[in-house]
Image (cartoon, rainbow, N blue to C red; front, side, top):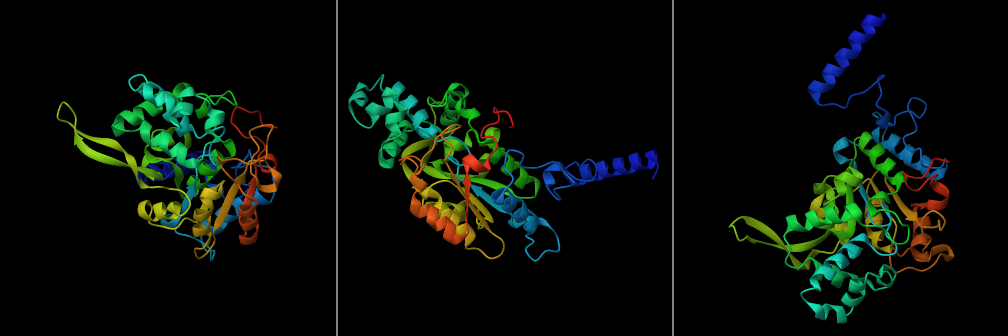
Amino acid sequence: MTVISRLAAAARSVLLALCLGLPMMVGGLSPAAGQGAGQAADPLPSWTEGPTKAALLDFVKAVTEPGRPTFVDPADRIATFDQDGTLWVEKPVYSEVSFAASRLRAMAETNPALKDEEPFKTAISGDEEAMGRMPFEDLKKIILLALRGVSVDQYRMEVVQWLETARNPRLGRLRRELVYQPMREVLDYLRGNGFRTYIVTGGGQDFVRAYSQRLYGVPPEQVVGTADAVKFGYDAAGRPVLTLEPSLLLEDIFGGKPEGIHLVIGKRPLIAFGNSTGDRQMLEYAKAGAGARLSLLVLHDDARREVAYGPALGLPASEVGTFTQALHDEAKARGWFVISMKSDWKRVFSFEPMP
């Protein structure tokens, strides 16, 4: 084929792609497609070569390669991801709790009694290490009080503004910088292979929807979270408005995760990622489906680059992101993959140099 004919063929391919709304490809294969390790750049460069990375690559090939008995139609390629501790840092306390504490400090200016009542007193103090040791029910109280009476639009705007400057006190970085680079690569890799990626989080649905597109490439309608009640009404100018209420419609944790998946997605995921006991039922639900399925748990065993906690494998116990030995044992018995942050990830964050 002459140079001119090759250029003409390439032009026809581009025109066809534009007409059909297909992804643009160079050299006949999109790097994101991940088909054929020898034909394209490594889609998971931040992952160490080993069984976990191989399982991810093999799984995607198994469900996307036409002609295989395990092939899955793109309409059914669903991937679900927990957020806190799975997609970004959750220590010393969940980011949503830190944001709620900042709202409580403002509320305390007009309601000083909050400064003397626990758990609000600790939240207002800004001591995130202390908040991270609180039972989950106290964290829930902090979050629910902080959203009382605020409109959905105002709440999301405040989250976006807060995230611009909010820092993790333990790691000293902006919270939005603390997304795990290996998991970003997985999100991109799956989407490049026809998957729809959903965040299924115990965190507040409106909180995560405020930044999911920016940080993860996940549109807000593909976030399934703990859903707060909302009330329809009108503002002072007579415009319709939704206002958040301090009560829950769905608590998206433990068995609530499969329930939320059914309510919002309506299909069982092919692949699910989590990191704690709160994700157990979601991983069980995903793996119980017919055909090729994959369930994975992130184990925080890297005290040097992030934070080590468990208490599985003798790691320090934690109220936030608890990963018990029983969960570890179940993962091994059921054929789930446990992702070792220390061993499976070459780098944890995008700002780290590649070794």
